[in-house]
Length: 249
Image (cartoon, rainbow, N blue to C red; front, top):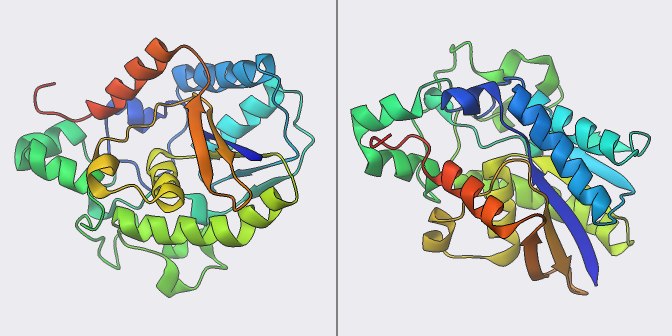
């Protein structure tokens, strides 16, 4: 049996303000820093250790990983960063208020943009300053591969490619791997690994800062997954994610 641990970054400034984030690069809040440290403590108390770790190229993912590894006294292990682990690109919605978007377009349209598999958000225009084409982090990425907006299905493809080509070979070598990423990145990875249907995906809410453990069979297919920590706390934090942006708020 193989094992891998996933963690969604701690609360960011955009999370706190209830804004669409995507490839925007806000920092962690004090709460987010605390969540990351607590995740590291949970992993340490449960006896986990790692040989290498992955993060996206966005600071909330990188800082969460750094804080987790600090608690584990594992700052020395190799860390690989990749844009393919970035959050789903929310296109022209990036930086907008989820609540205000819900008021303007309705809860149903908001949920379609946030949770449906194949629907893309409104695309960024090529001259939009939020377009990452000129960002140094992506200078080695082919311009045609840098999105102006993504559906969750688009994210599934890029995350699945990274999983199959970069991570699975390491897992097969019995390397103990930790991935610090984003809500939709992890949902995309779960969709890719488990092939859950769109209805189940719609209701999959991943809480911030709580380690998610996957046990995998000899074919690197999931046997089971579970969160560390108290179930009531996990459920409460998942509800927070589910309720983001509703008009009723």
